[in-house]
Amino acid sequence: MSEYRRYDEIAVGDVFPETPLSFKVSEKVVNGFLAATSNEDALYHGGEIRRAPSMIASVYLIDLLMARRSPPGGIHAKQAIRFHRAIAIGETLVMQGRVVEKYTRKERPYMVADFEARGSDGTLVTSGRITSIWGKDQ
Image (cartoon, rainbow, N blue to C red; front, side, top):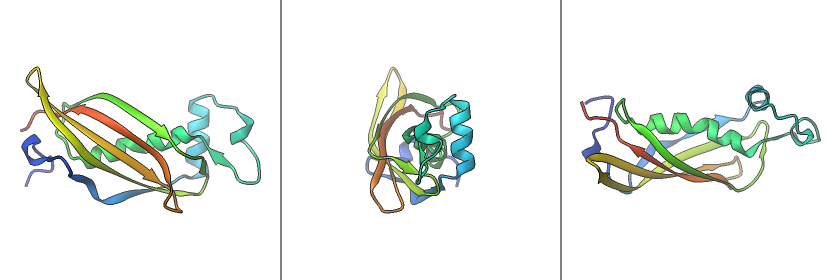
């Protein structure tokens, strides 16, 4: 079996990965994200419960995209992300995607997937949709 999945092997309804990915939102990751985005908002730099910017959940999307096991050469065509609640430093997020559409346009295979990130308490933190052009099957 190839480490990559062929386009004809994916189907609407497929969930990836089978076991949700888990990420701890550490202070180190949050500090790096705040520095990279030049975010000095006091909301994220103090308080009884230190919060992380909601956008930090998107940092973990690359691991979710890799979990699809698509071949090299694919193109990340578009994405939409919704933020549902604040994230606390130290919280663990779990993330999983589901294929919702497949189609071909201009002889290129497209795959559309919805994803969700849930917090330690099971509540929805982030959700969204990613459209990708599938890489060439080997």
